[in-house]
Length: 309
Image (tube, rainbow, N blue to C red; front, side, top):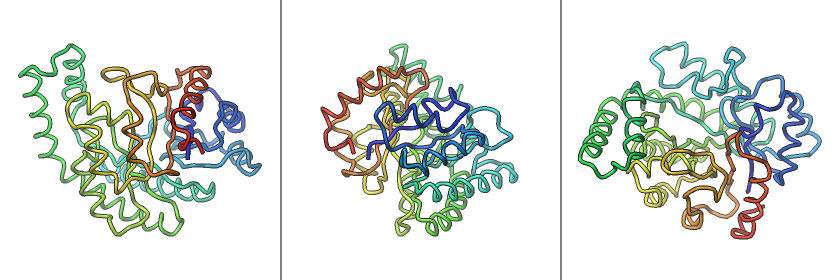
């Protein structure tokens, strides 16, 4: 299933029906309703859905956005927070999103599971600057990366357990509603889960058919560019749990959500791990032009004709 995320044009619209129409005009009939959506756009979205103008491929938590959050902030509330009221708010909003996803007949709900308290400026951003400066093979870079991994693994267990506890509750409701929970690969190593944690999480829910893995092409490539993993080796390891993925491209070393074919990704080897028919959702920056997207879609259909339905 080829789909398109509303994150591309959500911020340009006040009416949900017009937002949907612009995506359909690009050439997509399957749409992922993304985070950052104001509740004011919901009536128009529901109207377009009821009229059969699009099918809802999936929903990205939180949808709609919490009314008290004035910006697009999918991580405003985290399951891993040390504040109990924030963990509860994350749970309440997720369960409401699940209900809405079921109403829209969505196939999946993309979830962020939280983070650990490590300042990204000290860790991921520092490594990214060093890579951008051509220092990826420097001893100082190697040491900084190893220190990062060790620190992250040391403090991770508490936050991993909070994520597992939250997901256990959410999975019960997902099973009742018939919506798959797609646990997303994240762009920062400070986020939950890391790849090692993702494997443990998927194995923990191995007998639960409504929990799986969501592969974000760009997020994983960012970690690949930092030398934290190998993109294809990781996909081979996690592919038995794969639900689908967010498709976008990456300009070296760390600018993601580019239009497909505008960056460094080689899609052919990556797509080998995705079963035919699974969701492939283009998740593009609002800065991408409609003409560029249309051109990329033509090329995509020519190169991957079995990945266009």
